[in-house]
Image 1: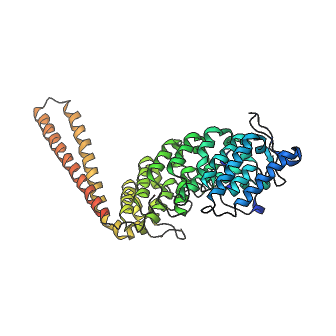
Image 2: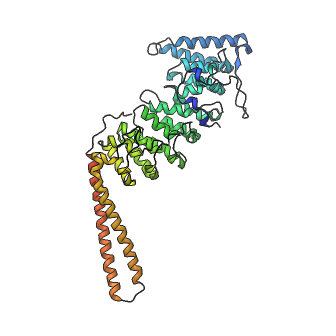
Image 3: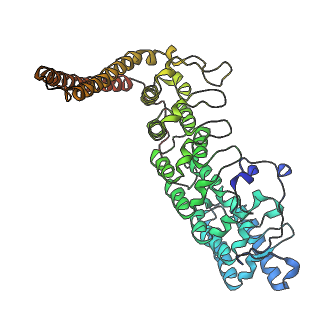
Length: 432
């Protein structure tokens, strides 16, 4: 099983000259499932001719307009399936550039109608998923599939049937590509269902971490921020519940918690899903509210400029309830967020009296509970009826006051929600 940390060069596309070339000759693993590729020199003339003809046909199909040449695509898919079914060994052959039928299919067959042909090529030689065209890992079919708008939907099937390929030391962390496709779901075939199905089939992906310290939860929030799209809260919660519990508090190389990233996303999208993710993280990891990143920035600092918006306000209220002292804490000079303290911003100023009253009520109620309990214990040691009567009266009064305090606290909560509801609606939420 590889560690995601070893694959820093998969995180972002790079020029081939910047990549580390990997071996083009794959050795059989101890499982016996790996097979060596065959060069054209190692096969007879008939196989060589069939291989070359299929390669040429796939290269030619690239020039065909898919909308007007659907019949040509269908004919080629059928031809590939028939030829490879008759001679599965064709799926093991590579040309002088180390290109197999599978890698050519990934480069040339861009429609979902080719999925059956691609599946057959994989079934005939799963090892071809790991054979890098031209010796570079970014040209491995498994890598290309994970980042292909149409073919990424094949990953759950691969994970279910060929998990050993994903475990292999040559395999990149394909979950990274699939997360990217999901974050671009308005122009790819990847959906929350596809992502869930893959993660259910390959739960090891939950434990992976890239060189920046990002786990899958960090990454999904970062990608949604990059693409300016709301992250679906139900999917995020589903993923979070299946990650190791320590994952929710883990920081990346910038010492950002998931809450930092979620608040940053909310500051841009200002939508309900982002808000619910923040509230979920506050509930699950209240300690993250007080954690600063490498810039000494608190999660609330990301939101103060956007505190005019309804869903942002709801999270600001939750953050201040959990860490009221942050009201007067500015961001450091030079930080990438607004450096003023939250107390500078009108909405946050307006809710401060409610928090002060709430604090006072809670402290008074706690003091009454404690004193009432102490008095009750004290009178158990006396036979003085007057003292016992006084204790009973005091207890009754304390209970009445505490009950009224609960009503006042509920009223404060309602008033705070009303203030949040007066906020602006999001400028734009991309709906999927």
